[in-house]
Amino acid sequence: MAVPGEKGAAKSRKRRKKSAPRPDEMTPEVFEFLTAVDDYKRAHMRSFLGLEELLEVFEELGYQPQPDGNGDELALLSEAIAEYKREQQRLFPSWSEIFRVARELGWARNAT
Image (cartoon, rainbow, N blue to C red; front, side, top):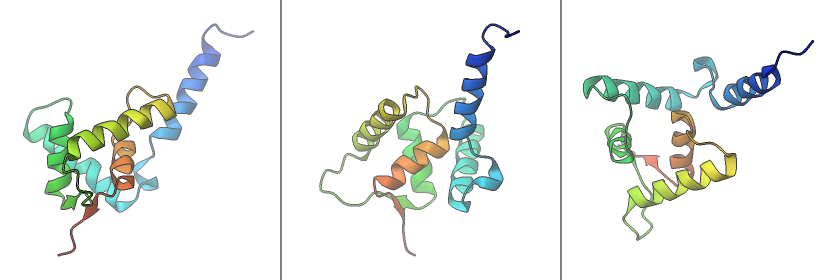
């Protein structure tokens, strides 16, 4: 006999598993980014980060946007994340998904 809501819960778990990789499934770059986000949140006593703060984390790790002439990285990242949310039908993408979106926008680490 089926338990009410069981099918929906299984779909939810399946959806979550797909979007949240385990640490051993992450690239070193993603793991470093997630660690930096956690460190930032602890250092600034924050539960959530805004996009401005997220850009600080990227820059602290040495990532810079590709020059495109626009100069408004915040707006570009915000638009790209909104598009990702629509495409993936997700209200709250994970930090690893946001990292992937930023990398697809061309954010790259400075060669020093």
